[in-house]
Image (cartoon, rainbow, N blue to C red; front, side):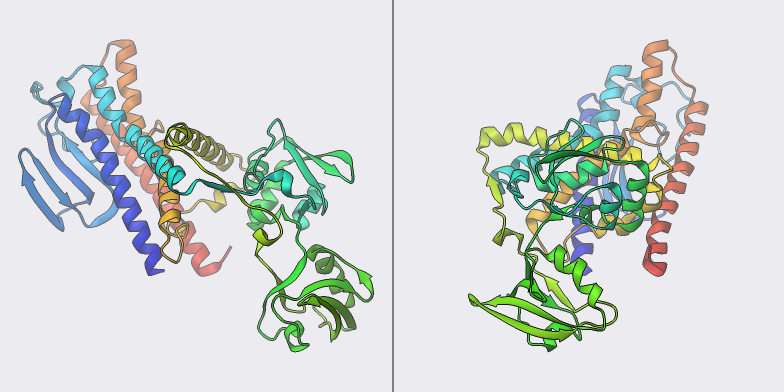
Length: 442
């Protein structure tokens, strides 16, 4: 947990500072005075501060974001004491609307630029690992929800709506985000359409089984044992490859998974290979039908995982592709929250949920991959037209540019307060969800 916290704090701090620089740099370019630049909020006092020129640089003690105090602007500080006077030339409100618009959108633009350069670095350094969808020659293994949808073990996914997946790793998320579309599968040489219904999505969300709906169909190779494993007690070893049950030849883990529970309370004969030699072991299946033998997770031994390498020129273009794809996927996920039939709003989380996305062991590649996605997420959320967010300020500026009339200070104050309490409610809701799941599960 400590390593996850460290990665979370580092990643979020980097993104906050760069976001605020996105506002600070154009503000200074247009000769707008910036009196404060803070990582975290400094209500009443700050942990660290230093005056450099006109700007106080510091670190606050409330880790809920950061801010730049741009003179002449109604912001989260609600400091409007001097805004009733005629604007000074160095104030935000004295600048033309197009300059103010650039300053307001600078943070969001910086979020997307940050993500872009991270992806360029990742593509150049690591390339892109993927499991080609067409390499799943044995098809997929699905869970109960997948069966209810109409999928079957061994299905080969051809397309999801108009989308033809190149990579298996993209397929589960594409299904999740394609409500109302059909999954086209090859089933024993015939093409079959499986509808993606709202009910199916609601079940996936409730069961938290997005990546269990489709998994590569695998042989049954002992990968690990549960505590008190019946299989281990009978002499099974890690690496044993199971190929038969009671004299019947079975090739895949899902076949054993479905068949063994039918023999609860009975003795079974398992045929297996060890070091290239076939043998049979006998064991009694508990009433619950579980023998405590986990299947191997070493997919790469049975399917070839490819790595697409990127030159500098390819990474320059590939970075934008990554930003576009991640942003599109996040927007589609965001829309699901407002489809109440899916009950996706129940899975909204706060800081703990974000923290848990980082690896429990320090992994620089994983750190930068999630930090890039988090930067995109923060950019999108900040541009939403909610007062107190950048997007809310942008809306008022656009209205002014269209109508030629600037909203009064009072209107901006009221809007800022409404936005503040709305964001506070969302913050309490998201983090409340984290607390509920931590203590009560679900």
